[in-house]
Amino acid sequence: MQEHQLRIGFIGGGNMAQAIIRGLLEAGHEPRRLMVSDPSVQQREQLRLISGSINVGTDNDELAVMCDILVLAVKPQVMAEVTGALTRDDRPHKQLIISVAAGITITSLRNWLGDDPRVVRVMPNTPALIGAGMSGLYADDIDTTGRGWTEYVMDATGEYLWVNHESLIDTVTAVSGSGPAYFFLLIEIMQQVAMELGLDENQARLLATKTASGSGLLALQSDEDAAGLRARVTSPGGTTAAALDSMEADGIRDIVRRAMIAARDRAIELGKDS
Image (tube, rainbow, N blue to C red; front, side):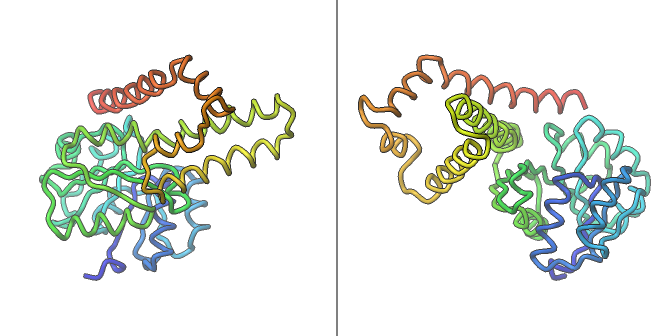
């Protein structure tokens, strides 16, 4: 079967599901082969605005038996309830399960779903909404077809990488899954301070956001690592050195390290709590 003809179903129609769906449609996937189930009227209306040809409903069980790929795009706290309610045993034999929920292990998903399905854990991030996502992927037992199907789906959101151990998905969560919020916080702070120093809101926002996006693009395209790029901006005794010295004195490295470890540990806790 050609990949653009795969029947792909989503349980949960929130931002991440919508991002994947938009990417698949832009890649030429047939909208009638996309199915979404969500209890929210508002979410269902948003999905219909993406394409009126997408099959949108509320019956998870019915959707699950109709698709080659089943994407579980619900919050970790409700994953056990949602998967446990899939009572029909006539799902396609080689159905691929893709979970985008933080912390939920493959063992848990197999226990809830039964019949030892092919399961892939994916940790995407919100830049997927504009096709600029960075996702981490893990599967403990996946054939070539399942791997290819997974890559087809996630390629629609941006870039991805496979990790060799399931625990590393929790690390991916701390780096790229939660990571956009770290950068948004820095942009937010820079905007606020810029306004305190005399710029208006539009000027502050433009300067902060363009500086962030440009720095990210430069880091991606440069052969130098981040430390080298930072050194290029930092003249001894200059303005940048004064700013970085202040950050270092306030312990910025330890602040970021503790924050990322806290995100990793919370992902682990979500798996244990489920």
